[in-house]
Length: 380
Image 1 (cartoon, rainbow, N blue to C red):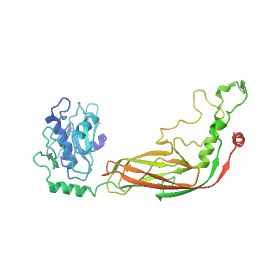
Image 2: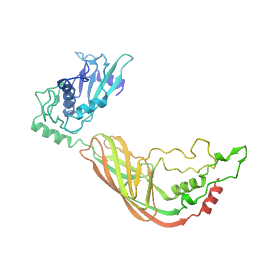
Image 3: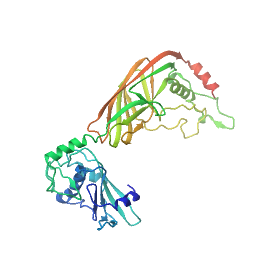
Image 4: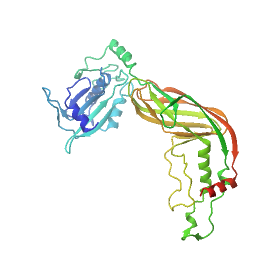
């Protein structure tokens, strides 16, 4: 939240989605009774009947007669991770919420607790402070009363209502531009380039001593031929693996994460950070790598088993998001099954994902060390 969004809320009245607090909740060194007050308010908003995100604004004095509410400021904010630990250690399952500090001016800041809509009900697992075990406290109008928890009928209505307010996510292949969805099965035909292994490719050499304008041999990129082989491998043998995640539900999906696994002795997978298609230079700058530095990979393998983790962050209802592109190579004809789950805060449980990638190797082309060196020299 920024100062402009906060300003808009200062014209709203307290309700099932908004509360104002002049003083900070008692937290550090507080008793259980005192700590239970902030848990009660977060529970109340999490269980409230509302159509939008809820906010508790700390450091704001409520004014009467429709006047703009006054920012008095807060100078003892609660660390988000401390509040998360307190609340979610007491409830039946984690509540999605956040505590952030919004600076209004040089002298004043406001603590903002945001509670998005999510699947209900929430309650404490055992008595804590003033809160009773298994009681579903609900924010009604402008307050949350300990004496008016939801009854069984209302709890059942919550479950039924929230079943229509969950994200529904799916994953499909798509083209490289992300403009066309391709379903859950695609086919690649390739002519596979068999390249010599790195240990059989000699170092790149220019001679002995110095040459040209006194350039030392220490500047020579001795891996130049091996890097040519790597680029040829990427350009000839790898195909793009582009995936899209689609939110077909009617609510915002948060913190989306896709985890996939596959098993094959014939495949290799790299992410975009490792996929290098720039021809190497014969000379290096001292103290620097010739090839660009790679990004942290989201791909790993152990023997024949490969693991992929891709994150899409957040996704609005009815929208799709293109995940980071991967590149995959397969040395023999086979159908590779990518199988796993997609996770999100707005899912009742992870959704299973199955994707099939068919490779048809139409032939092989052998590249000798001599051909590789000849090609590198002609391309220099």
